[in-house]
Image 1 (tube, helix red, strand yellow):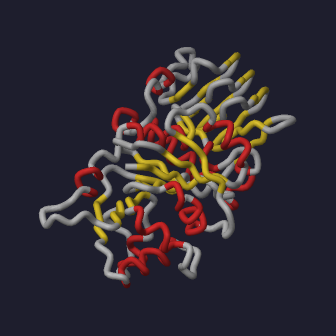
Image 2 (cartoon, one colour):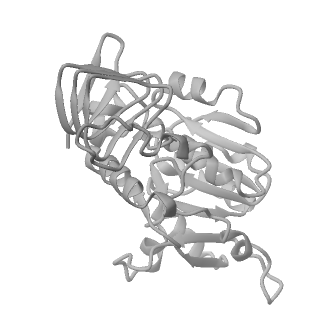
Length: 300
């Protein structure tokens, strides 16, 4: 099995953040979205992972540099979801699990393996879509397209360039019309498509509240509730051991990434991205991202 992460999108609905940090590098407790997804894939028998990049390609390339069995593919036009899939055509030679790079999953995906294999009738599905139980869609093509994770056979990829449309529903409709064997698998746990700053904060809060039941990269436990000098005693928080927090009042649901510096601040429900600095401010319900000259605050 191979894997494909679609991480080329601009993230225009949260441009105040994605102007500085690509969407796949949005930060959550314990790592970026990309790191969370790679950790998910590391538990599967994946021979190679391809990451499709476009927006902030230089940052993405640096984030991927040196990773074993991971390489990037530059997306060519059209810069749409189907365009991203088509860009990977020449690389996909095996059954391929596809992840949309702006999705967080609270559980591992190992349960997909049995579903993707040859079934009792000796037939392997052409495509498999991981779906939430309540999609609100009666049309099957639209219901299938409401996912952020699916498995495609390599034979599907050459046909994608010939499709006239931008959305995933164009592909799902074509698969159904062509009589492909398409399987639906219920999602275990929960997932969130992160399109807005509030979505990122919501996922972070839920992860912290449900830490033992939420998926995160290895070694992330080291930062959980690590700030023992919290004056208010509020919990939970996630503070990287590689960050610097000085003379600050750290309240609940605060995340501070590695290399971040927090001085003389009051923080509540805040994510301070790796490498960002914030000083002498009271910040609530916001993310702090590094820029070339200073930091930028972004609120819902």
